[in-house]
Image (cartoon, rainbow, N blue to C red; front, side, top):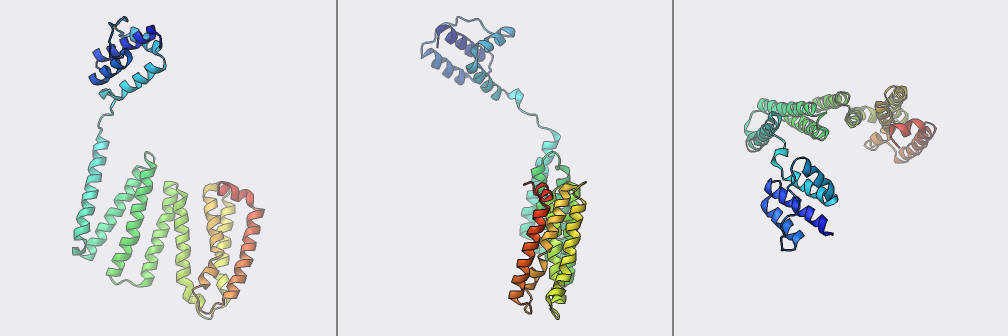
Length: 304
């Protein structure tokens, strides 16, 4: 490093020290580093205003690094505390405190009070998801997970406490799946529609397993699933022009329900395993052929 450049840097460091742009010990350290312990008198004038800008330009890369360091320690650059920050902090503190309180005293409440608590928490998290869906999408995903987990676990728990029947539990779970589907269009998240529709398919299979198992035949089982699969897949292809985002969800769920009869037959004792395997081979061939001849749509839907 030539002497002129070293004197310029030393002068700039002394200017930072006089104007308190860096802490005192940082300035002393830098001065000792550049003067090697023997600080000469500064030959460059104090750089203020326009002169300081010229000196920064002469410093080059080293000056830019020091300027970045000085901006880090500038208290005036810290973001001010806003009302939203205070409200977010208070809301988070109250939620955490409420969860701790409920964890210790939840069993002491009556069932109607428990239902109210579950409903309030699920509603609060859902509203928070709506509030933060544009400003903080990751928080929205987290709040939606909390909301629906509370609805599922808390709702089933309260129904069991009240002695609700299995059909009523299935009906409640169906309402949750419908709410998931509706929320997908509200928030614009396709995974909510996947969860809702696949959940409805599972509930449909669970609700119809007794009817299918009564006097079971493989073709009667297919009648419960194949038309539904054709309806969903066809709806997906019809929507491909205007709403490709949702079209892929419907088509994929339709393709999944195409194998619903075989999955359901695994839980039916009268169903023969060799017949199930044969039907699976046939359906895999048909599904792969459909995928091949309509691959242009699937590549767009699945973003391949």
